[in-house]
Image (tube, rainbow, N blue to C red):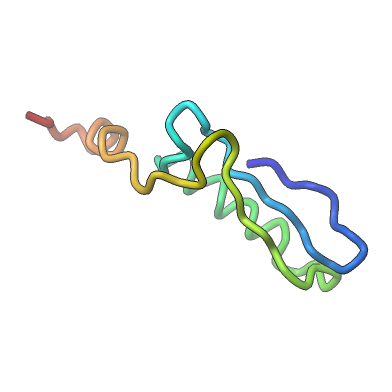
Amino acid sequence: MNIYELDASGILKVELCRPEKLNSLDIPMFEAIAKTIELLRDDKSIRAVVLCGSGRAFCAGLDIVSWFKHSQLKIR
């Protein structure tokens, strides 16, 4: 995750950074999102957060293959 500088109006840009997988959500991505929320939660100067994706897609959704690998289930 990239967190950019807060602009003068209190808007913060946060970028998903997994462009090779179209920013699909795997366990490390969920952990990065949770860590970012923890980091920003108490900052009263932030009025809004714009979540965007690096590369050519915002987010392709859940990365099913990585979740199956993590849970040790087999995909046919």
